[in-house]
Length: 262
Length: 373
Image (cartoon, rainbow over all chains, first blue to last red; front, side):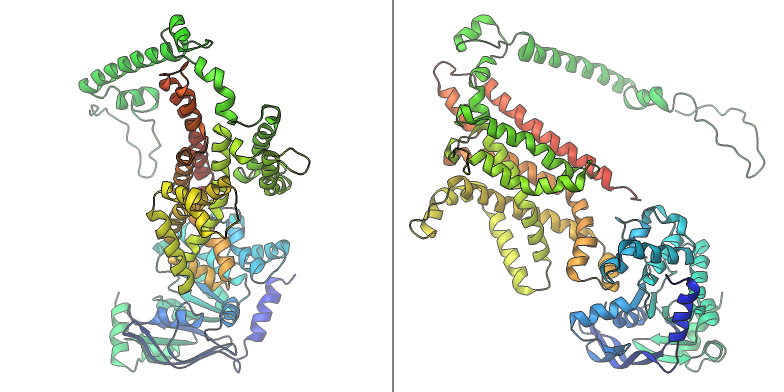
């Protein structure tokens, strides 16, 4: 059984910047007749942490949901860890098992205990025996610092705890990529920090992460690159320092001035 | 009603202790005051209600028990003995009410089947049944066992289905219908939500057609028209045909109850299951169906109770269910005119069964709501 240190080592050694984890080329998507994503090009290498920000309706959530095919793109290509996303169901299930996702509203399974939430993927997708799955689950619950809640149901936890369980549930699949879709937007202010701390800790292990968030503090501390989207397009991408201190595009400047003015 | 402000001690900020509520606002006294005696009108209403209930209950006890006649040879004989209910009519015909024309020397078979129903149901209905996993094998074997015991063959003398009647027939129709319609209804509900057009259209058509016609129509189809559709010479049992129709009918209604449950689950649940890489059937079996069925329990039990009671409609195509027996009994010149007693007895049987189902569903809802917000 691997310890957290070994696990961290596994991720770190995989964090080889020459290895492309996600490659999106000339990707378009429509909702009906509404052109929601326009000519998206994005390459994410192993170990990279990318924060995607932008006004609501700019397509940032839709973009990361395309990566595990919760949304279907209509044009262009998306390759995840060498596998192209097509209609092939087996392909999709394989990619999903390698890509973890954390949702705004947690989406824990309310009829299962915290532990069962975490063992479900390893047992039914990875086909691990129950005791092994439970070992993994407890390890990650410890990592997000709530092993003592393992036998509770999600409804008995606070929002912040639920979101940390959701992170643990994804990690139990030992994914190569983690997607975060506004993970702190549904939380009370008091609980945002505990989730961000968990994410920061994960970022330090070298996990490949794509994070849609409005938490600019997190972007500054953890991101390798920040991407700004508006109207379905990627307007600007840059390292956090130049992105925040010296934005190039007028739309970016306006957005930053609005969210940073408080 | 506001209480006069009393001088209360002051506490420093953050030090205020939890105090008991004002006297008479909680507990039994508080409940009585709030619910029965909250105003002059309500107090009057309470006394009138108590009086009405008293009058009704005492009259009912008189008729049902104190002045009732339990043994008599005929209706006239009954009336000589007392003014209450004449239960003698039930007592003399109780065998027919329970078994129909099932041969007297073979009646241990349906009795044994009925007794075995409980160990077969217990592990399915109650998740804390001792030895549950072993007993579930028995549950699985029970339908075949029950069919063999009641029908016979393989060493037991065969009893033809037209001899089944009374509550035995009701139980056969009800239990078989419920057990068979549940999986079919779930599959129909899933089919109606399917991404595959052909599956969806087939399921929607089936549900709408079956729901769109009265059960009696289906029973008539079963009893007469089906013979025209089947190849000449095939003749399968009327009871089986009726069972199939009752099952299909209940399944169509169940499908809609289950669909309601499936639609009540948030999209996030489907997405979270998808994002783990679960396949459709695993997602359905592990995530969506358990939640959907829990939501659908009241609707499903509604359908089951309906099915159980609707089984009395088979009297129209000539099967001898309790109502059929009642008809035959009331046609007897000796007992003519005792329809109150006869139908109340049947109603009591149905009420007990349906009330048990209803209570079970409430219990199950409570049991499954562990961890709900």
